[in-house]
Image (cartoon, rainbow, N blue to C red):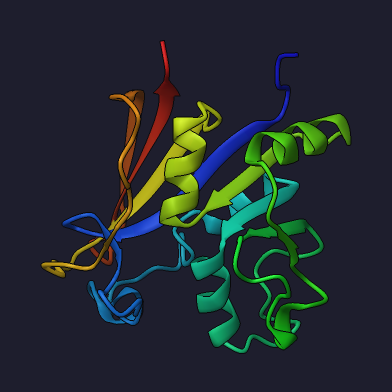
Length: 191
């Protein structure tokens, strides 16, 4: 059965390709770049447009734990009413502050994606480095949008883990923001 649902990654990295410090910190995302830049034309660097294009989300456990650490109010929750799954074999229950927003999943990724597809979901947001790599290895990611922060961390948690084979990206489009962040969007070509 051919999958109808589109899977897209939307993630930020440092200029040298890390999604977090070695300890998992992401504070550098909020204090890098030109803090005085006029961001009125795209204050969220395309996130709201992207999130409005998806109807469900699948994230990794570490991503969920980072999100849980932000202690977001219901008004700050960035994913609206979308169905959100967090993948984990070790954590069976979402943190208290996310229990009404995130459902834990420990089964086969392909089975989850096929189920969401059968249930009529059209577009999934895939988040978290290990999760994105797993989806790439299963040839499930259709597009990748990477926003590079103007900071070199020199080490940390890389966006991509080991892939089972080289994966070609095509159709690059880029966008530079006044705060010195650069965003690149690719279509994934498994051929």
